Image (cartoon, rainbow over all chains, first blue to last red; front, top):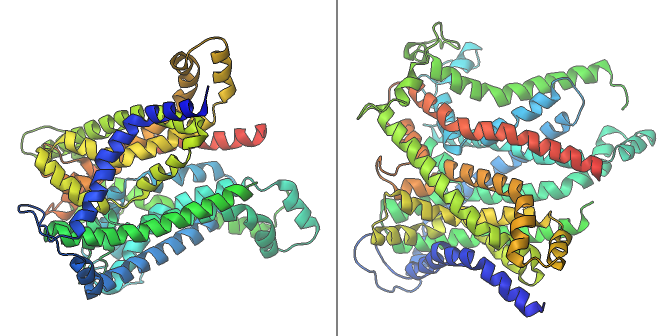
Length: 294
Length: 281
């Protein structure tokens, strides 16, 4: 069979996928680009062409700058915490102890909990009047009076990050654990014989096996954190005083609350561009580590 | 394995206990809230365990008395099942031929990069035109409209999974069948697809859970009981004026049940897969 025929046959088999992807992804993407150069409203009249106005206005607004900083802050802190706690948990689960299998199975629970249920659960835990966090901290004497954790700008972001971290660190832990189990026992024993201390053993024996999967998890988690919407929408809607408003929330407000489809689209494309850069980083990293994987 | 010192053992068990507590406490609390009488949840100091266990909220939410909290919940449960179910089935039917084609044809391998790339697109990039198109077609607040929109996520995702699944099936088996005179479609039907059945199952299952968890599009494109999904219904409960927090918790437990059960069962498959792979090399 000739190569041309094989290629044609492959495209024919991909036809249903191509049609669907053009209809629900390709076309909307192009239309977002078109809209971003217009002053269209979400409902009603077709807008007119306004050139780069939307981009200039969005990029120069203090709202955008502030929201970008909030998003980066959320992504940086939550992903860092998830990676550190995830790796520590994996190192622990890689030890031998009674109940290890059960504990490993439990790690799947936060990951499996739907994001909306997780957000709702933590919203209840942080409740200013009846929440479990207030009750627990008061009963052990760490807190004098109940606080509104999600209602104060000083604590809302940290409370959100804690909830996000709780749901996502187990996934990092499971990925890291799978990588740890690929470390050959004899290399570890050899390093013990050579008298390597715990830190050197981690740094020179274990880390090379962990690095690849961890970098992949890191980039994927960063992309997810950058796009975050659900958990924030349910827990704070971007408040109080916009202190937890991330880029996706801002796009939602612009395009749907204020019904400004044109400027909303331009903002959405700015976000998309940033996510694309992260995704390219992901592609590069995966290629690099796929080549060197043991 | 070297013998551990007593101190190291104590440290390990303490850390394991802490980890178990961190992972379990919020989930257990969600369940406890769902079975505590409202008075216990509003008590100060808080009652951590109810004096009388109260399962009545599960009955309330799963009853279909018109205009009750239950009716809205049951409707959203039904909507989620229909949308997630049909979107997964359509996605997997599209993904099987596409995944096989990408897996077996190196000359179009690059297209997988685009497919995975679209999976990473932020939903906000597509939301505005999708909203306008659904409004134009009269498909806002409809199960069909939401199902079509969910293909933006599920079609790339399942294609990606099916492609890796087909990669694991030796193409020599297909070549052998073809040498014996079987045509392409016969070969796929009697050799490849039966072997790919487990992958199809897990891909469809993961697709279902992805749609089950979806919130952003459902929030934008549905407005009442005719199409609101479970996630939107729960967000409504959480953000609304429900005075009984136990009811919100109960809705959460019910929505979490399917993915949690699947997660626990799949974990076994996952771990045994890892260890088997290690033994066989």
